[in-house]
Length: 389
Ligand code: ADP
Ligand code: MG
Picture 1: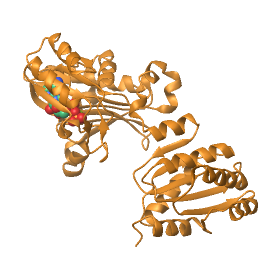
Picture 2: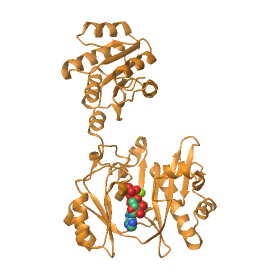
Picture 3: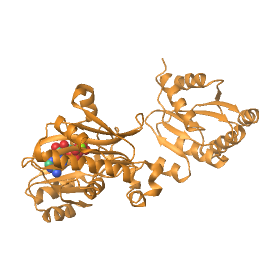
Picture 4: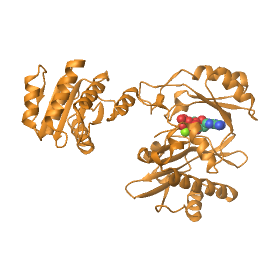
């Protein structure tokens, strides 16, 4: 689960990380009032959306007066903010965060991220903060420093010091920076965060360290243990199709390709997306209808796929086990009758009750192609949904 910058900063503050004072505003007038209450001579107005790259996209403005705060908030609120993380469709800005502007001498990058391969937390730091860390990693990999933390252990001061020296910090800054990194690690353990990132961690003109941006991702599967974190969810930031699917108990993630997919089992769904890509097309979604899906759930899944206007074709890949092929077929036929299918359909069915399933499909008035294997299915789908070579 993702949270907004302002929520992430409030959590960081609980772990002793210095952040600028500020307040949330839903209207330009409120933004002005927040600024009036701040002890600052310049202000920053920041779009609150679940995406980074806001600065480059025009969602962040540094201004000098409360009048300018109000004017900037007027421009940013309700804008459709497009950044490299929102995709071309952008995100509607519903709230802004107003904080005092910091006098920045240098911008660092620091983060704690769950390193699944290493089965530990990785603590990462770079003297090149403020920009895309992916770009730094590509162009300047030697400027990214990493250390690892054993499960349940704190970050040891010597580890923190080594990272901070590598970023060019000295003296008191190293002491403050060590406390910040230790706080991030403690946060990640206690709140079961998979990412806690500060980019930039500013070194101010006066030599202080301040977190100017914050991003935290939490492990969805652990949210039950952290109701105070689950409460921070912003349903408006979730794709409406994903919201609908989740409410129906479906495991659906929207992607930006053109091939809708309906698969049972997360592993098979991932493999299906891989073969679609290998065949030269792009999946429009991940959908695992699960082992015990009912006919209604299959029908709902189908409706969700069809509600995505980018979908040009649908690939159904079912290996019937607990979810029997006839149940799946009946669900698909039911949904097709209800919502109407105007896009090509490729079906690959195997496993329990496959003959009954094929029969239901064949006897329906649905037009579809049958594929004997997963690679044949992907090749057929790529022919109708773009990109086949
Ligand atoms: P994003 O990463 O989404 O672009 P940031 O919060 O990192 O958003 O802001 C982008 C840039 O704006 C920062 O790298 C920093 O240079 C500047 N900035 C952000 N907050 C402040 C602040 N409080 N004071 C001064 N500059 C800021
Ligand atoms: Mg940032």
